[in-house]
Image (tube, rainbow, N blue to C red; front, side, top):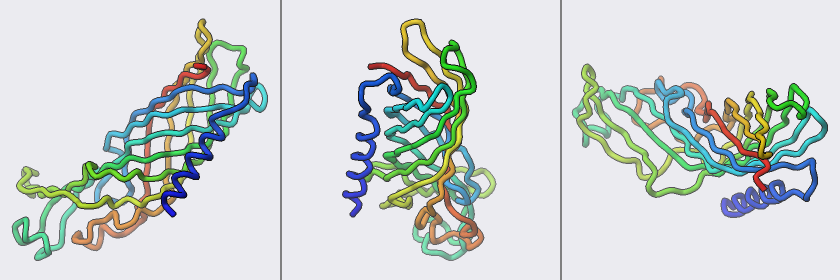
Length: 239
């Protein structure tokens, strides 16, 4: 089932990203970098490096409205600190008693973002601003070398005194959510369009078992959803 889902995502993306030769279509490469997290994972916030690369296509409905789709390889993660329950299974690795720890995890996602874009000026201008709303669905790519660690820290100095790796990622295999962005488009003399935008992604899919089972119950409250804040650069009309 998971393989069929991945193949379906790729097939849909290729059908969208292979438009007919017409002036209404434009396409090109994109790259992004920023921060990511999973909400309610201890004290985690937008503090983990995140980046992606992909291919984007745009279809112009008129002089202002565009539909867009991308196929992206995305690197996401989170980092959060908390306190374990005393006298837990962790006593095999750490001192018995409450343990301050940092939990960190990174994953690779194949994402398909879709957007409805509004250009605030006519494309005849050299520079014009735009905004967009969209949705995205992602599939977690299995990675045996992912960075998934639980690290014990001294309560006062936060000095690391022990650490071990997770054997399996705690992220859900599939993720989906909403996104919103704003940017500027610049038409170069040689023809390609360069865009620079800032966007925010809010996942809607609960991440499975993201809270480590040995932590205090208070950390289990709330939903555990992926979040991103990124700066993205695209070069459109490369072909």
